[in-house]
Length: 171
Image 1 (spheres, rainbow, N blue to C red):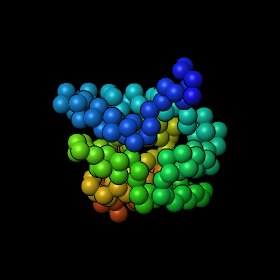
Image 2 (cartoon, one colour; image 1 turned 30 degrees about the vertical axis):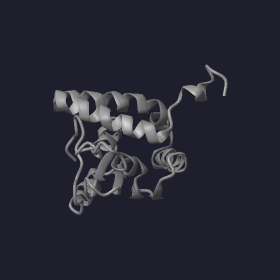
Image 3 (tube, one colour; image 1 turned 90 degrees about the vertical axis):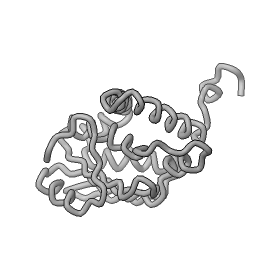
């Protein structure tokens, strides 16, 4: 690949995940407020990829977005969508798996970064995120997104480890 080619400037996902983990650990030493600000910046960046899909296609747009992620990041996950919600069941999270397969241990709250960027986008678009991390040491989770806040509140009751995010709005 010639120098300057766009792909020549990208780092492999294995390295990126480990780098991300170290950045999270460092920012966490600065305090929760700084970590929240960082996750909000990630969220703003991700808006470029998903906001229009949500605003124009709703749940189908979300399904389209996470279907691409499933393929690009080689995720073992199931996606289901109906008129009331989208559900993503991550059976093996490649990101946490890579962070765990590292000399440096993963940030204790590594999984929080997903809800940290997804939650603010859902709040902004009027959807309600229920993000069950299940366990911070198992690379799996369940994400449910609802338009109806009552359905989201009901789904929260069955979560094992409910995620928070900066500016989380009560449902």
